[in-house]
Amino acid sequence: MTEEALHGLTISELRVSFDGFTAVDGVDLRVGPGDLRFLIGPNGAGKTTLVDAVTGLARATGSVRFGGRELLGRPVHRIARLGIGRTFQTATVFENLTVVQNLDIAAGAGRRPLTLLRQRRSVPPEVDEALTTVGLAPHAHRLAGTLSHGQKQWLEIGMLLVQNVELLLLDEPVAGMSHEERDATGALLRTVASERTVVVIEHDMEFMRAFASSVTVLHAGRVLSEGSPAEVRADPRVQEVYLGHAPERPTAAAHVGEEP
Amino acid sequence: MTDHQTETGTGNGTGDETTTGNGSGARGARWRLAGGYAAAAVLLFAVAPAVLSDFRLEQLARYLCFAMVAVGISLAWGRGGMLTLGQGLFFGLGGYAMAMHLKLADAGPGQLPDFMLLYGSTDQLPWWWEPFRSPVVAIAAVFLVPMAVAAVIGFLVFRRRVRGAYFAILSQALAAAFAILLIGQQATTGGTNGLTNFQGFFGFALNDPINRRTVYFVIAGTLLALMLLTRQLFLSRYGELLVAVRDSEERVRFLGYDPALVKLVAYVVSAGMAGLAGALFVPAVGIISPALIGIVPSIQFLIGAAIGGRASLVGAALGAIAVAWAQTTLSEEFPAAWTYFQAGLFIVVVAFLPGGLISLRQLLTRRRPTPLGAST
Image (cartoon, rainbow over all chains, first blue to last red; front, side, top):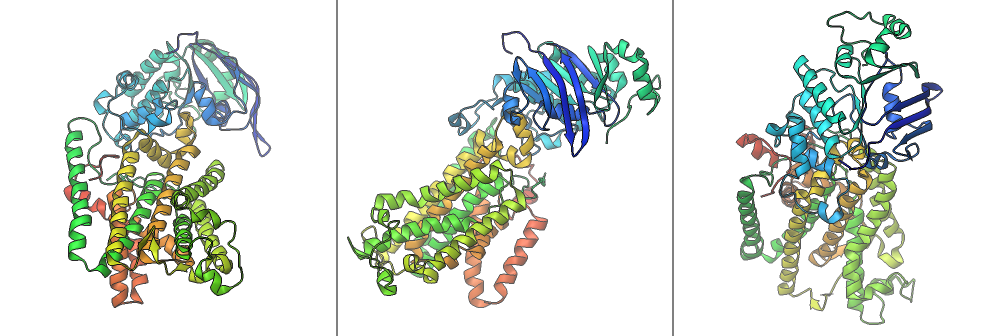
């Protein structure tokens, strides 16, 4: 981790449109340093598109600043090098490589060509540390393709850790996970957020209530509500948006507006 | 077997291989590697020259040149996922660079190559022939020119994220265009006939069987050296990164790498190998012509690697040798049937055994494959 203070993410007037359809329509959003922010909203609210815009995958107008630097207009790999990492809805790890190899690649974007041409003789310390943090140490030398769905998600988070990103953008990290896996993931996110800024796109309300520090609700490409989990739940506009789709049941309430 | 079809439809499990360099397997793997190379060296340098006739040894030299191309293909296609269907372009650039030098050396200082006199259309050496009088320039050109051309193509193509079938078609078209260009410039390239009738090879007469045998040894040594180089690339961090790019280019980009650069390196190296193979093909076989570098030869370069096992260095090299050998043998017996047989084998292997024949070893021994490792 860098010694300097953590950075926050400042999004202003962000707009993304595809062929006339405006997916993100003037979003202003501030995520403070060290926050564990949940981004929720019904289908098509623009959550993933927002993350795409921040990471350079989708063309956008407006401004996205992180640590005093403007991100819009930079290519994907340059944004990644500024310390911003993301995961995808479906875990994308390198299935034909082992867990250690996956992490080692994630750790190595700054390696010089000569280092790249040499063989890896041992497990780098940061990789070792990440293996322990995400609980994959016993599976270090397994092919990533043989991991369970939950383990792949943890591996992805581990890859962001060794990449030493300051801002993690996670797209539905607990989708499809068992109850125990969810709790473990939540605890992991808390640990991670103590040193970094984390933004989580999530549908699971229970998970959000248990682990979010703050919540932003998106609806139709705009920010509908923002605040603590309790404040957001009490907001009548949020209730209206959600009740229109799927009434929240008290217990297994789980998935509201699941995306395909 | 964890065969993983990528978005480009070209990748698969990285095939056979032994353990990765972790744990106790590393030493064993190193010994097996040394043993494997020692056995290959004995076969190529002692057994083959002892048991094969001069004629068969020259044929083997030709097959080994194809194996060099296949080694490059296993890097670019097997590990990098780039369907290099146009290696004939680089093979040809290397081959013609060497052939031009040999022609000029045969002609002597200040003289024109024989075919230019024959066609009589020019009495002055074209300016782009002139540098090839120098043996040093020619030797450097046989791999630097293909690498430079590959760098330009790769830079333009990978930046624009052209991949999969589009990349394959583009490669193929470039190889075809190069062959057509050569045919069109008969006065300066020899046209359809190509360049042939070489008398000497850096001062050694090529009609002397001893010297032809030396050419064979040079080729065998070069092949082993290229395999060692490629093996190092496979095992390095770069090799792991290349597989990662093959399997999920987008993900690699989000880790802060530029996948275009990663692919470019593999593509350029494979082009250099094809160029070197083309250059050594010339003294071994005595000809380079458009028919040897166009669309059909370019596909044939790939077939050997696919059948043997594209992601495995040894599989690709042995596959190339075996297919070339089978072509010679079977087409002597059944000239018409060979093409169909080759195509059939290619389809069966690609459809049912994407790791190539070498992956059979694994299926038989039921060893769990590890992704990268020592190629024994």
